Image 1 (tube, rainbow, N blue to C red):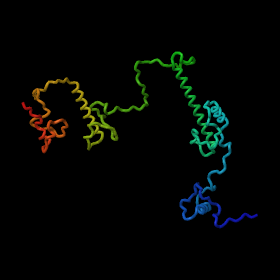
Image 2 (cartoon, rainbow, N blue to C red; image 1 turned 60 degrees about the horizontal axis):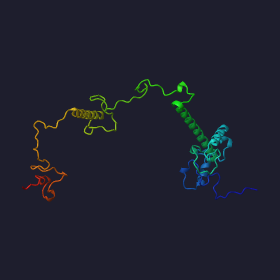
Image 3 (cartoon, rainbow, N blue to C red; image 1 turned 180 degrees about the vertical axis):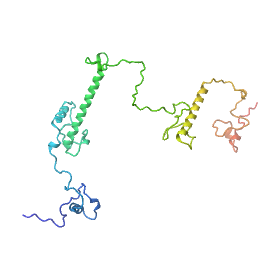
Image 4 (spheres, helix red, strand yellow; image 1 turned 90 degrees about the horizontal axis):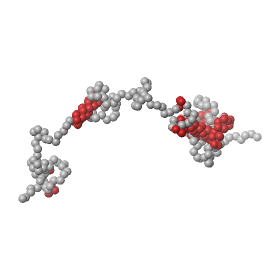
Length: 300
């Protein structure tokens, strides 16, 4: 029986059905026709560089021997899982497709069936757990070896006997010859040191630098740090000098009982926020004029 002929209304073979999400060479440059017609033209056009296979990925599932775990790894993971006393064990080497829970390290395995990818993920997770457990056991052993009295293990060797005896009360820190050593901060350098400046590009705060400009950054920061150091030395000297509450020679002193808060000859400075007697009843004058001789006259 002859095969029925395809209608001329249908797209001739080969072509990709609408909805195909794979890569089609030169398809983005084709317009004005249906998806099937464009893909048929591209698949039949020998001038378009393309693969000999119309679909690049294999549509048949791989053989089980290519994706299954080695026998020794599978047995090791199975023994680890069987020794766990976690009650309802969710992670197994035979994860059922459709499980929507979290599979540790499942995001690192793809391109195969769910059972195969989850098997690799669970096996890797169990190997990591075993490695972490061995490190914890080693740490506990070392802690017991470094203990005192009854906590010390009887099998401790001379190599692991701790704590070691100190050779000095305050030992110097060890710095290897190849270790990077940072230079001292410009703040810590003495006054007048040639390196007492910051390099160009430094984004930190430099005191007294806001008034130095129109020169190089190292020179401006050097002048600012010098001024800052001078202020510090001047402040240190003033703190060390003895002080006295006696008035200096030639300094005028106010007679006892006379207040200088409300002067008679001059007014107060504007924006003074203290109390001024009778100020709220005065107007049509400046603040200085209205506050002159503000003390009330005492009638005797």
